[in-house]
Image 1 (cartoon, one colour):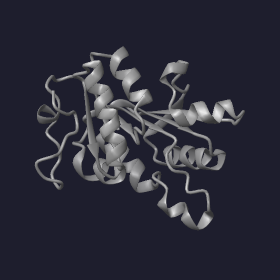
Image 2 (cartoon, one colour; image 1 turned 90 degrees about the horizontal axis):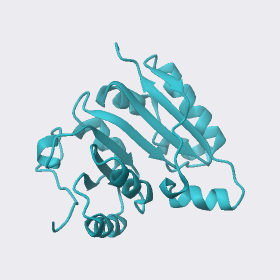
Image 3 (cartoon, helix red, strand yellow; image 1 turned 90 degrees about the vertical axis):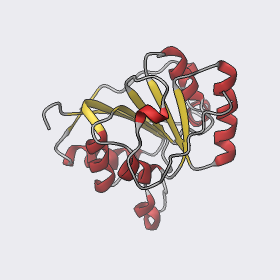
Image 4 (cartoon, helix red, strand yellow; image 1 turned 30 degrees about the vertical axis):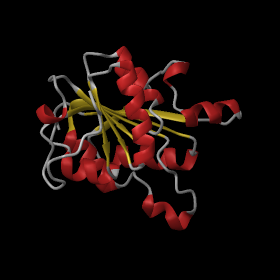
Length: 197
């Protein structure tokens, strides 16, 4: 395998998952996969799932690509793109079983809040692309952003909060390890899409 970096045939039509992955399996998306710590762990521990890692930084993705190939993982693909565009335009309807969104850029200054990933439109696109009963897993170190995310998910009328996903130490992102080592709090949430909406 030369690379797991995937380039769509065009950037305006929904992805054909059979072209992205060699085998048909449930699909989970790691939004902002960073250095790939969680992505590598989950792909190894859940070989019966397909995982799409998303990030904007090509150099970072190339490093993750090398790690994936070194481990010989056939159930992972990477794509370089803005996550909000990917989910709004390229993810097919009702095709994702779970999203993992760990430490999205918090844009802490109030004047920059409009740049945050989570918005009403983003939540609508999560709902559109998730399968019935699909889940959204979120972790952040910003309490106000976490509350904002919870409010947006609740106001959507289609997501119900449930116990957060528990991950072992080896599955944690580099950000989470740094924050925990510094004694900082992290906030975890999990919301499940209603089966009948």
